[in-house]
Length: 509
Image (cartoon, rainbow, N blue to C red):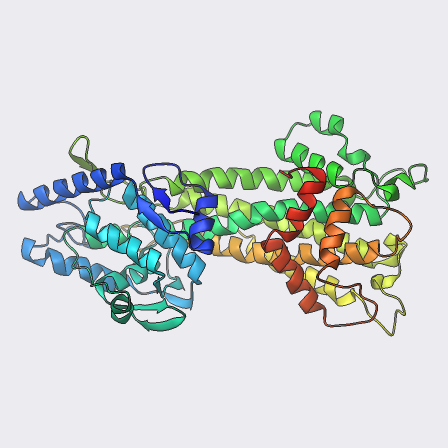
């Protein structure tokens, strides 16, 4: 892929994932360059005139009443990076930091911060050169921007902090030298512009949401496979049912699963059996998966809106030569959306774990206990279900919303904060847990399908089964299952299963 141009609008979650994970480089549009320069000229004019402007000629937060002299403005900008770099905990992985850099550049590309074009170009050079600042993941309350992590991100610009470059951790100044770059000397207003924004929350949440949306398709595949081997009916996928309750996600999930099981000899073989209707985990799978899909779609709209917004304070309006003080740095929209998405993804895992239980429990499935021969000598998928139960229980704890837990900061000047980065990190962790649960369901469904040697499964089920079996063999005797789970998770993340299923049944939505 060629460079992604970052401008006023138009950035998507797909763009974010491509920059963060595929190493795609970025550049500014010409329109953005013009707007950045126009806003910067206004800052320089106002500083010469001695205007009192928050964060540019004043202190920050509760110290906003302290006027900073013109000769001290440069020191003020570097001080804000040093003082705000108070993050702790594990460091963000490289793909997340790349996403933060891309979103920080995207915000500047809108031309409302007053930062210099040269400083933005230096950030672009960091990203495109593969310099990854060391950023602790904890310390932001999600308002006044993600101050602590963004300060750590920006330290490298001025030759401070630490960074990874070509797999080596080193001082920020050394990383710059390795790439032939010089540290930036920040001018009035630039330190505040660098730390003031919601980009850490949005980056973590955006990547997690991108994965969760793809995981919803895998949940449909897993559910359809389980329904077949549990001798379920495809009646619950009939579009007439879903037109009578027209939630869009529900209809999509039903359509996906209906196509995955089409032409199934297994389902046809028991159409006249005595069972009146299936258990909820099968019969209501479109309704549950669909509700999660609708929640994720809402979160995606919020996240993409945030990605294409100006989240600084003050906001510079080049077209009218004004500045406005406001609260666009407050991460409540993203925090609420991420917390909602946490529940949506947790529910995909919850219902998947209950299907796993039906698969391994002979009293519910009619299949061999724990899907293995010589039970007793072999435990089969017994403990895999334990793992799924553990993960969904953890997800229930993580689904408690972070955004309702405000603690005032900055001497009560900032008296309501959204804790958005916590919401986003929870979504990331829940999504990873859910990936493992659905991987276990896929393994169990494939194992059960091995027992239907004389009946052909649905076209999508067959494609998924073949792909799984190309990497993970049938479990004849006990072996270390964690390796199999990891293999399926990788295949899900690389879209290998999805890319085999879709040619057989059409694109899944």
